[in-house]
Amino acid sequence: MSRLRQALLRIGRDVRAYWMFALAFSVYDILVQLVFDAFCPVAIVTGLPCPGCGMTRAVFFFVTGQIGKGWEMNPIGIGWTALAAYFCMMRYWLGKSPRGLLQAGGVLTVCMVAFYVYRMYRYFPGDAPICYTEGCVLERLLPGYRTFILNYFAG
Image (tube, rainbow, N blue to C red; front, side, top):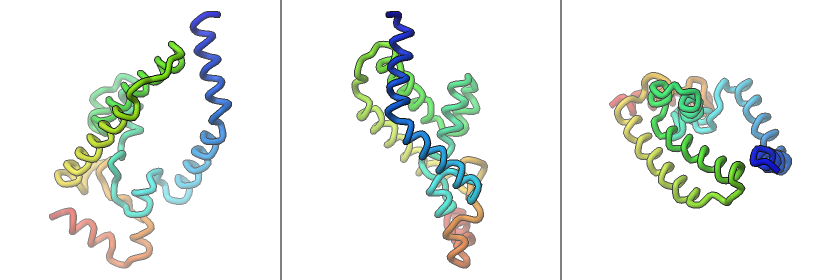
């Protein structure tokens, strides 16, 4: 059996095993986009960006060769893109169990948090993805929340 056929069979097995997760994720995405016009639960509730804000766009830009745009959205996305490529190559193409995924993911997560603290200190509120999400839940529930947050982070 060819390597390509084996890889496609492995992908098919994973699709059959995880289709419910993909469906639940898609339903969540559609619902929160319709109701809140946002995806991130942190932004929906607090209006603040999360450490992963801009990550999906960054990975998309990196994968499509738009390195500069990806770097602007979230430079840590290049690490997640490389980790995903490694995972796919090992699992699907070579049929081996990828090693070190949790450790690499942990390092990337620490880098994301550190970069988030830097961006929040340096750039918030600013351009996407480091911007305030208007109409968040806390803004709707607490009078003066938006003003407090923007004044607090503005210095």
